[in-house]
Image (cartoon, rainbow, N blue to C red; front, side, top):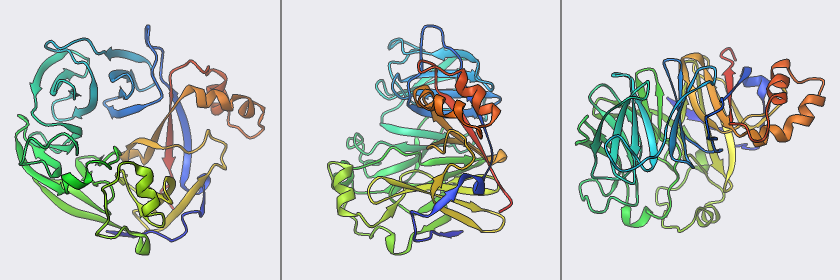
Length: 361
């Protein structure tokens, strides 16, 4: 599949063009604790919400209506303990929650109820991981700290077995040149049993089949595609943006929902443009999203529910509280939105926003 992206990144997309409905779930109170505004990991599995707080480096689990069920807090260095949760994954084949402690270089396995099962040490550093099937795991490696392992020192992706032994590798890059510039966008996206992979600053999305990468989708930005000889030897993202101001590039994965393909990309430095494409008709909407249905707005997507054609955002209570007066005084705000903002204080936990996409355009 090839998606040709229109030239005009500043084109206006009305939310009513692409979004069927919006609803909200407030994350409930946590005893003696409060979530921060940064969700590093957000997963849905069997009517539970699994969330890794990227600032606290802890894991929180909620019911589907937002009620707090339990927390996995940083404790120590002993068995079943971790000091810094850096990524999480759900093993859907064994119904297990897996927590990666990057500081102690180990994986901790829990039941979905939070009961500790076992732990496993790893010898390399990585950012994220997802289960391909019941015997293979896809791992997004850290580009900075694996020089000591020559086998994978110039790769960003490895496939490993359940003992974390490397089976295959991909995403080749020049470690000496590119270590200084990388983005931590989500490189994996799951739709049912299918797992997709996109390395930042590239335009080909792959499906991971067993131990192979199969080309699945090409994003064509035309003359705004980064040159193949792009120099990634920059100390700061700002230097990269100044060198390539007229190009478009992706730093996170495209999301393949059942009926819609959605992705965002950067241009002119850190500006964001969005694309919604019908998988049924090929029709697409591309540009900057304008809120015309009086929701809270359209925010960065944290995860998806593919089979329901739903995008999910994670928004702080401070942002919601700042909009409260305007929304409550509006004549067009929905009753659901009014109820949500009227019961939100700036010190509450964040809110999940669910956007159900239209499928008939």
